[in-house]
Amino acid sequence: GAGVSQSPRYKVAKRGQDVALRCDPISGHVSLFWYQQALGQGPEFLTYFQNEAQLDKSGLPSDRFFAERPEGSVSTLKIQRTQQEDSAVYLCASSLVGASYNEQFFGPGTRLTVL
Amino acid sequence: AQKITQTQPGMFVQEKEAVTLDCTYDTSDQSYGLFWYKQPSSGEMIFLIYQGSYDEQNATEGRYSLNFQKARKSANLVISASQLGDSAMYFCAMREGEGYQKVTFGTGTKLQVIP
Image 1 (spheres, rainbow over the protein chains, first blue to last red):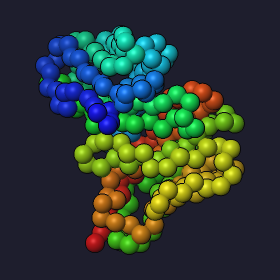
Image 2: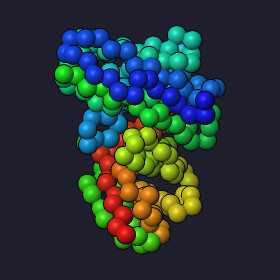
Image 3: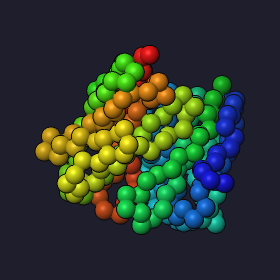
């Protein structure tokens, strides 16, 4: 596809359930980012991959959050034992390494609602 | 301290008029990059414009220009000839350091264009 895609677009989970959010970056993009955007706020960095290597996971809010990108393309963000405070839009972005300013291209996001 | 500060939660502008959205930043790095993104109600983040810390000229992209005042650590976005489709949230963001791509976003400004 031409852009970053994310699935599902909407996810409703009961508190305590595990969820998995998928991101398909733009083909050839080495860098991949996950952000969490709470209602009325700017995106907050969660984690960063370069190819399959997770170079920065400093933004993950707890050990319930786990991200992987095993083949350096598709990435999955997993949230275990979801809590109400996990309700947010989860944005994925990808970029080319070596681009002059490393513009990040964002997907449409997954809106997670935890009941 | 906030790395990116956007002091205007909401702005109104008359169609065809120009509008300035404020952004100040805080960094001790000499090398950094500043971005503006637009987020319409659909949720997708759309890249608008980029300014590198070493760029001597203000960045321009069509109707968008970035008023970069390095000494004041200010990176205001100017939108000329506003259109109804410009109504959206606007986020200022910063990447610090060389090679590293983590981006920090501000809290955003909601712009509404009035016919």
